[in-house]
Image (cartoon, rainbow, N blue to C red):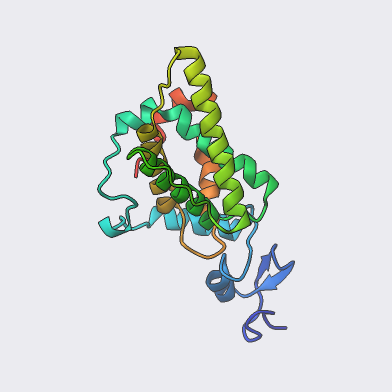
Length: 213
């Protein structure tokens, strides 16, 4: 009996996505590439842990909006917005099980560009074309509108400026780029949000654990 993918090596690992055993080499090579791995696969979780522990520092060319400075204090000050964006992503993933890191990154990038141009007095909006990314673009945008409306009603004026939203989105975008592994079917960033991102009630206690890109 041979691996159903390569048809050469003996199958030794049970693949929950395939519903059968495959060889270790195909598991490593095709994971999140041609195989749509479920998040609870033990081999996937082990691979994500290894990648996180051996991640190389990103080069300056790989940092989104590398000329934009986002202070750590700014992130902590606007943590409710950050957690709200994370919650919007996870809530949409429950409805769209096919949502991937690439969709999240596309949605966040598009929104960041929208708010960047708003800060210059120009309205520019170009939602992503793929359905999942477009839905997430709308979900995050709706959260931001509702958050700003709620803050404004309490304070009597708009407290969260367009430039603030842009900087928060840049932070989340950098976090997404840092946590994804770049594979076509990767959900490493989404798994990071689900497993490590603090819930609003835990923010004060868990803030020191957050890694700022």
